[in-house]
Image (spheres, rainbow, N blue to C red):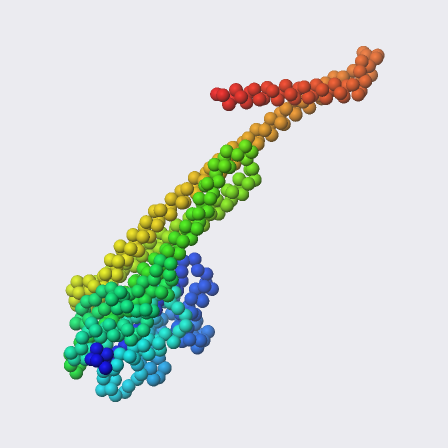
Length: 460
């Protein structure tokens, strides 16, 4: 074994983030979220009464709630030297799993250098405690003290390799930033998910290696890490929320592109419908209902895409502010954490820029669909007006015909058996035929007059 394969008190931490209550989620879904989160900590051992107590703890006011109250942490079962620390951050459940190996009562042995091969076991032991993937994301932290004369860079490289977390891990590819803070060497490694991937393909590891400075060194390092843990809990939350929101936006973009294709089909069919010799009013009404349905879905997608853009921006600001807070509380210059700010610079350049561009380009589909709906509505109104005018024309023509026929029939009927007419000039059948002829003639004349009047109005 080379010197770069050892660490004093090697420790692995996993920070997991789950959505607690998303927008529009029902009480049943929120309850399911709670149960799945606590299964990560207690497995299937969580009783109904414990669930009720936990639900009550969540009602406390504040954006940072210790879910175990005074108990603070849930210790791992013996002989493991570790714990779970669950909190609620706004709308998110967060838990820190911390494991340093097995309990060793002898401090000399406890803080003796160990081979870093143990890192994979520490990681696997933590993962084995839960089988539900994180819904928002997760970050790993590996830390320990170097032995005398040990090269930090080579040791960190070996730690990443021994952790065996990332498929086809490549140090040169995955190392995104490095720097020094509080005397320790930090190495930030990240393999982001692709645009077509999912949040489970997001791998983030922060390796923190402290120098050994004597007999009291490890106790000083432990105090430092205990101060940093709450900050890391928030910092990684903001980071993972940014990535999660971007992944959500990729799915929304895909859904919007599918809806956009349907919009293009609707728009391409409009000229044929407008120029048709005979318009099918019923079909047009069905098309309008379809357009309105697509419009509602598309508008909802656009709104959610804007929401994800705002989520990314908000959490990037919070990420940068948290870095400033860490530097301030640890009494260090904020420039010392500039290497950690590389993530926000990357996210601003890629994530914010991309989602903004998607919002602009895909919002055009909404306006296109609005125009299509207005066009279909216009055609329907024209056809309704034309249909109403035809109906009125028919009613008027028939009315005149019936009126003329009725008048003629009444006149001739009054002559039948009249004292002034000893002989009937016409029989009843002749009167009927004549009244019908006059009625038809009257109807035709009125039809001609109505058409002439319609042309005169149309020419004005």
